[in-house]
Image (cartoon, rainbow, N blue to C red):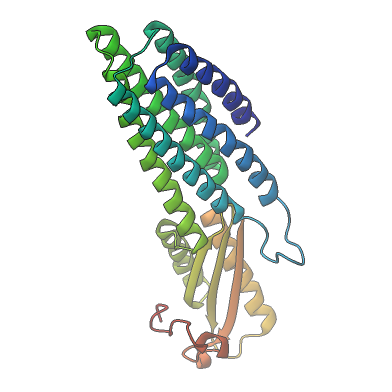
Length: 302
């Protein structure tokens, strides 16, 4: 994130200067994207620090979910930037104003594209490897900037080749639409995360681990539930033992099952809460499971 912050500040200054000197609408769109990116990196850096804070008396489950707030803020800022870009480009198109220094605009845009490819690739790779949504979202934003820069290069090259300045605001309009799409995707990710939408791929890995681990220890399971909080997996599951198994033995088997489950979902931190019950009570709902508004056993998968 320090790398992203430094690169974002440098590119923002570089592009804003380029947009001012060239008068290009498409370079302006690239510059606006960089301004937004720098602001979101500042917010994301704070979010990353905040998400690392341990659980406390006010936040028993930690602070991981700030990652989704960060993604939502970034998506909102990107969408706002897209609106400003489209507005400015439409004005340029109507006025018929062109680019004053095309070659300089090409240089500014090409340098920005190279820097964003390098830094964005690093961030996305690290974020996916360590399941850090904040870092990965920031990298995806940078790769959106790459798309914008590529569109800017295309528009400026068309101006350079044809001599017609209207390609510049047209390219800016296309870039604005692409930026808006990325902003919507980030907002969608934020919404699903805050609402604890199930990660289907992770759920399948968890179910496969439980199928194998429980079968090896003569244990059944049901009521598997999983959510991702931005940095960690939280899992709830009921483990069913034959009647008469001593608590110590049941605890030992459950611990081994939980260990296998955590390994299957690594390298992200995994928090598991297992509810142990005897076979004679397997089909009996607990009081908290039948509270108004909660799904029935059948709706939870039996």
